[in-house]
Image (cartoon, rainbow, N blue to C red; front, side, top):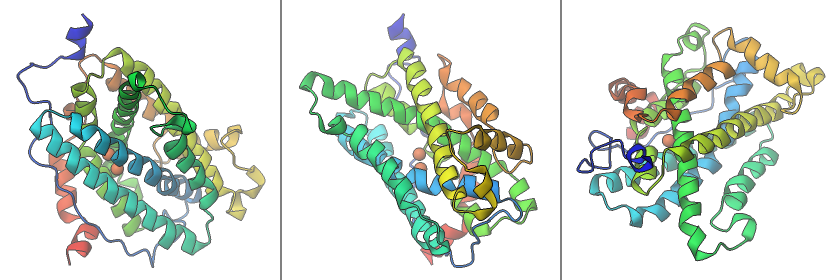
Length: 311
Ligand SMILES: [Fe+2]
Ligand SMILES: [Fe+2]
């Protein structure tokens, strides 16, 4: 039964669900005119989404390290090419958000290091090959790798959901949001949609099962939402307008305000995000069904940052 659930697809099929070749794109962003309040009149939503810049680089470089480690285990040629291009895309995402930290957030006087140090600890120490420096017995090393690849598959479902949100959110445009930040979110989101199947394919190919998807997603979801609120609070504490609220992920205000602000359409709400996770728990979950590659490629073809890098 479990074997059936584990492999819902034909054994003869390629391990890759990705159609065609993924394209690693270079991008270049000019942050010189982007205001900190990049959605005019919406400081909470601006800070909340700006936090993504702090959260992503350490995680995405961790994806790259683990995928380089998993690459020799991949026996399917197409999936191997997908994984290689996934690594190139994620490395570019991490660099682009790192650039936003240095050239945009830090340039506006936002202190980021105390927060990014915590992300670094999570991905470079706790989730390292030797968790917190402790070497694992050989028998557990492959399981630990697969566990972490499963976490990545769960996270990649979330990034695909967020990618769709960024591509579909017209409220930002109506509010006069900064075009450079919008392009960062939409270029990244579109590539998340483009490579949405890779992490799940790799996890299944290396023996990841259906039941483990439950606990992996149950770990990944609250951790990501918690880190998001925690980092957003860190940025908000530096804005005098929020000083009285003492923003913290350990106090109710930021969670309540998140839901209140999401009603304006400038942020995805927490209940909506949780609902979007449900397909990942289905036995017949298929990342291909979660978004439109054509829509993503249409955005990527016109991305100003990609055009700027090409020029
Ligand atoms: Fe990414
Ligand atoms: Fe991704």
